[in-house]
Amino acid sequence: MNELPANALPNRDTPTSSARGSADSTAAFAGQSVLVAIHNATAAAATLFALNGVARRIVVCTPDLGDDARREVARRAHVDMVVDVPLRSDARHRDHHAHCPTEWVLLTSGTSGAPKLVVHTFATLTAAFASSAPPVPNMVWGTFYDVRRYGGLQILLRAWLSGAPIVIREPDESTGDYLRRAGASGVTHMSGTPSHWRRALMSPDARSIAPRYVRLSGEVADQAILSALQARYPDARVAHAFASTEAGLGFEINDGLEGFPASLLTSSGPRGDEPGADVAVAVVDGSLRLRSMRTALRYLDDDTPIADAEGWVDTGDMIERRGERCHFLGRRSGLINVGGLKVYPEEVEAAINRHPAVRASLVRSTHSSITGSLVAADVVLQPHVEGEAACRREIVDLCRRALPPHKIPAMIRFVSALDVAATGKVARRA
Image (cartoon, rainbow, N blue to C red; front, side, top):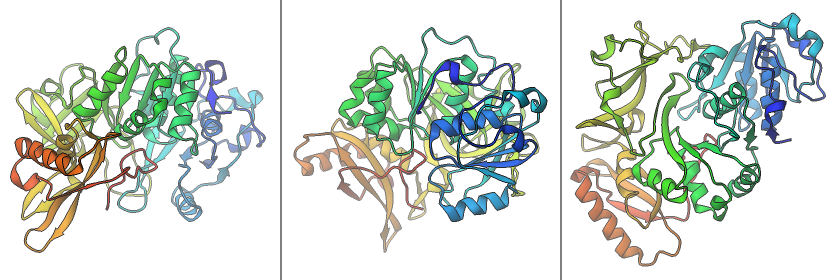
């Protein structure tokens, strides 16, 4: 089983659902802290719904987590029970255990060490779309994300609340296999990271789907990938969203352009809210900040606050305003220091990716005895491109026209592919 049709999703009128499987009934998990460690994504999704409103806490375990890390997460989350096989339907106990206030504990990517455990509720996870407009007729969702990560879980919950079926990607399923299955299932709405989509566009199976809506999130969506998707799927609405596990969904941009309109920023800075606004957005010291009801409650076993005293979450995503448009520069933690000057890799990648021969790029630092670091780039070219030396010169010239000297790559290496992490994001060196 790797698809959840609408009639297999839980009853949306009750917080507890049924799920088919061979494990004990959900009644055994009432009031417990439960870690869900089912490898099959579709079975895991059904089990999450079965436990919501029954368990006191659901720890959503990602499939790439090793045994030692899983045991450590279980210890930190004070787990009482572990579920590694699907739960079976237990309608007899549904009403008796419904409405238990369940905590949903999600894992961050853990790129700088052990993952943090982020506590959400069903309300914070669904606040962005719980009261949204009715679904488009014949809507079928798909996502390249694993549904146990924040980005994929958002799509899973959207499908559930709208009553639409969803085609779930399994952990070991290739991009091509998933695209073919999504196409055969008539997927109309598809989401993923820009890295997911770049891989999809490199596959001949990209033509297997004909979506009406294409969504990007999780990484900076530069103009090159937005335009490439619009060219591949001319009848689709191409949108990119900003969200994080801690801050929740911030906003979605539907105009086909990179960055976001400066009009989204609150008029009076980080202390003000626009009247009636669902999410308040501000840029302070160059960093994007959000305030909304979608923010996670807290870290489970970490005293570090997610939001400040006024409810603002510092996302760590750096922004530069250019006229009436705000552009993402990159993560504050990914900064490259070139002789005391700041370089955000994503900004340089956006410039490189504008070259028509470039499929994707990854900017990193390389050691310099003079400046400490220099900018280097790994570049994936489009198929059948010839003349690497000429491409290298053209890419450097393009960067010189778009960027100050310290941001221009000192070294460009052509590679066949870029590593993508289990999160769906390009794998960056720590």
